[in-house]
Image (cartoon, rainbow, N blue to C red; front, side, top):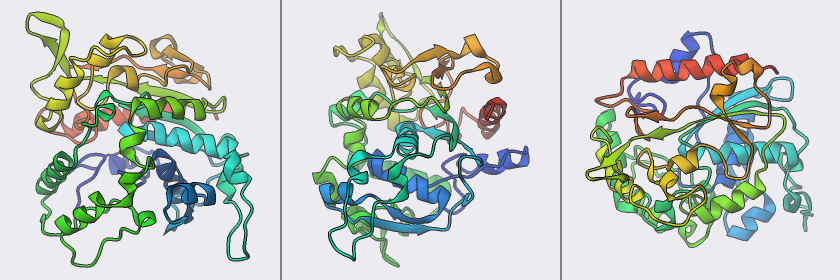
Amino acid sequence: MNGYHYWGGKGDIQEYLKSQGYETYTASVGPLSSNWDRAIELYYYIKGGQVDYGAVHSAKYGHARYGKFYEGLYPNWDGKSKIHLIGHSMGGPTPRFLIQLLENGDPQEMAFVPKTNDEAPTSDLFKGGKKGWVNSFTSICGCHNGTITADDGNILPFSQLKDFLYEVAVVAGVSTSENFYDFNLQQWGIEKKQGQSFDDYWEQVIKSRLWTTTDNSSYDLTITASREQNAYCSISPNVYYQTYTLDATVPGLGNSDIRLPQESMNPMLKITAARMGMTDRDLPLGYMEWRYNDGAIQKASAMYPIGQPYQDANTAKNASGRSKGIWYVNPIISGGPDHLSIVMPDKTISIDYLNDFYLNIAKTVRQYPK
């Protein structure tokens, strides 16, 4: 988007890490798609080839089996040429789906038998057996256990999301009369048309059959869906894991149990942050752990997938001494960035802060034994 980057805004964290000697690439997947579809897209974006969402999965949800063709960021990717994955927000569960498919495949897709000569057999991705292709995964504000606002149907309402995208476009210096964003929803028959306005394109998106199914981000961000996904995506004994969690809230006046958004929080996040900060729902880990949040994701969701093994990262600060198959939970970052400013700088969080933050992650994952 006209020199504007998800990782860095007007800065470019990818290029900064490259300048520091770390081979770094940025992948693009459908921001409104399900974790399954996104994981498949991530695989082909890295490895190359035409996206195959799976014959069984595509038939179940009623979208096309095939998507875009990608040249591949890293065509030589295999068990010897391992990679480190870093994900933010929904980029928490999506790489876990990819790791699950790489190592274990999917039983339903493996059982698929083509009915005609025109149908292709099951994609190699769904056959599993690719253990060790991912050396480590770092989750930043990951939505591992769902988010309360998604359960309530309040997360990223279409009108709010549209306003936010317009805001990003203005900051990036892009004309909002242009089609400045691609949601990568070709499997649902949604294509950007040459010269089409963003408003027209947006109408296509919100009226799509995508929203009549559970094969989308809105469902996958719910607590119910996350429980199902955590059961499906077991932790891998071949991967190093770590998480970073933010708390961008402060105690409420006269009631320290209530959490309110900190003053510097992005205004687009403050309403959802306040809602989360007052929850009294009966949830795993207790409702207080769900009140602390970064404006979009709660502390209880970002630390680790509930039910999977975890450990305080401070007990193994030296990454070379960590073990695979366990979530290392870094200390909560409070009073600093929120859910958006941890990837794009704002008035209080500078690009220098973000460059240092991600450089530290790069240094850490490089220490992991292969």
